[in-house]
Length: 500
Image 1 (tube, rainbow, N blue to C red):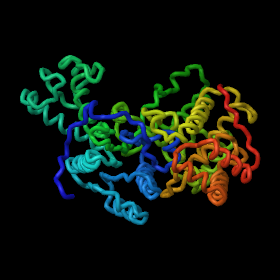
Image 2: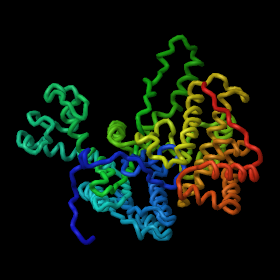
Image 3: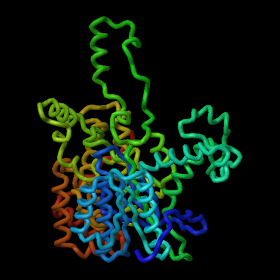
Image 4: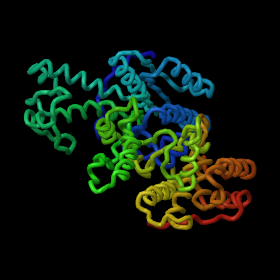
């Protein structure tokens, strides 16, 4: 680095920003289809341990490198690895180097065992590097892996300020300078009595909550799309947070006393069932931050991609669910081993109902904006069918939605370290939307996609090149794609899209 950069910079004001209206293409089908990442956006990547968060972030960097190789505007990538072992960091750097992506990537590391201040400094260093590129009119892509230390950092700061007593007022945030800063473990009702409420970003909250939110925002809101009169640069942020959002489904635990009219045999059976019941996921997964902190970061960021725990059971058809349960009962067979191969691919465990991009369709390339929303709608429809559907017969609409969702999820999965270019994603989404792959199963859809793309590349590469160059699916390119897909897949079958 030829200059010294400040770790902490002021956020750009609204007059210095511009509306986000272009895509930061990642090459990850599930991301680019379900929660597109806009250039200048701050997006969270949320999920428990072993859900593939770090691996997906590395794939996103490889996607930026792939775009540059295809002639797109170069993007400078910065990866902050916080709390990982040195072996993991070296392995990640080796993978990026093997793909040639380290030529345009900087890695900042605060390995496990580093102090809290050093971890926080690593996050700020990565952001400062990205801001330098942005302020010079370029585009940067910053990955923070992970930001869980922010919660502990704020607790340390607030305890230190509270211990100063009245002196803390001179260095407190200007939210309400007449009110003291309370320690983070202060009782909520006690805090309300002592400090009252303040208005912050249109919300009426306690002063201590507003101060914590401002501290979190000082990290997340450093991403921006700069106004063109100031150079038009951008810094896109992908921040990884281990944890899970609130589901809004938790209910008080049932006990045998809730059913006083049971016989002794029924009571024994109920007690055995309650003993086997798993506690809420958020309480069983180690290494996750508090759900309240996850929700607060989500409310600050421009969107979130939520990954489910490994080999999730969601959106399984009745048949596959029974097969998985039977496999688990075999000695030495885990759920990971019993899961279909496609469930172990990148993007297969995205929680569609909890993942959202608040930038909306502006983050899609034009061709993806025509196709991706209908795919997301079908997946969301399947979630509703599973929760509220009543006709669960093999020929009912409920069964069809689950079968269709399993096929779409398998189609959106992809092998690690293999980013998919825009033109191929458009061809795949078009084939899915028009029903060309409806005869495939989740287990064979990857093979069917590979066969179709190979045929299109060999026979109609000009159509793919036109899509890549214009980022649009025009009438001529659509006609070519349709004819090619008919050659490979046969006649199309229109998928059923019906409301519940």
